[in-house]
Image 1: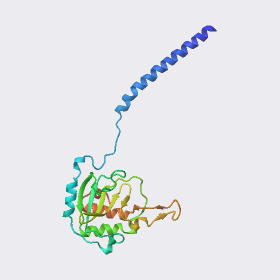
Image 2: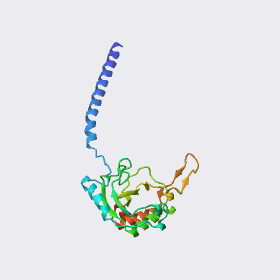
Image 3: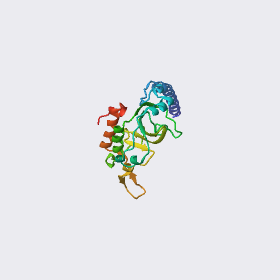
Image 4: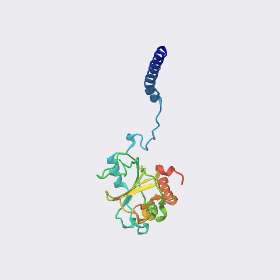
Length: 222
């Protein structure tokens, strides 16, 4: 009986030692295994900061933009704005860091890749579309990484700007656009929600503009 008990204790100790050595081996091998794994990180639009336009070039370009006039037929609120030029910017936007082409201090963000002023005809077409109820009314995602910015200027002073993200189907604007909030879910309740996402016609207008000025969103299918 005593021999059996002694044998059991020895087996238990040997088993524990073997388990401990196996665990140590796994802990040593584990970092090697992890280091070999490739983590895929989505590449942002601006992969090389050197491609970004400089502040001076951006400011100088404002002076060269076509002079246009507000069109009363473009709809609210654009028929009420006092501006004389609109410049489109393609930039690597980010909801937290770069939600707009121009920051709160009035400086251009350091991730602008392209700029193109709009002609009167281009401005009228996109503003007319952005003012229509038919351009909004779909859902949108929570993330916001805009690649298109439309900035209104009076001289060299910013009057308003709109940033658009077609990936999440949403936009932000410094001036209220009534059409964006025309479709309401749970209206009048604490769970009230606006469907501010672009409809197919709204996205088509944006894509068509980007095709004309050779911006990234112009490569999408309409």
